[in-house]
Amino acid sequence: MPVAQENILEVTLPPFVSREDARRLLAVKLFETGRLSAGEAARVAGLTKRGFLVVLAQFDVPVVNYPASELADELAW
Image (tube, rainbow, N blue to C red; front, side, top):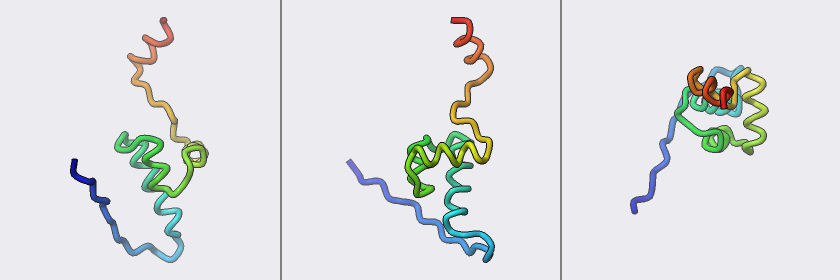
């Protein structure tokens, strides 16, 4: 089985944006759009999963994102 290679991204940040903030913001957005799981996004952010969940709360990003139809089905059960 081939070993997955890491994608490396190099960007120049403005002086008022720290590397840690940029990593966290990227991880939040990738999680919010469904591109990464919470665990994967936590690794990108350089945090524990629990720490990443705290960051999600700071940005008002829900941890669980049910489509309305699925949520209705769950509540009707």
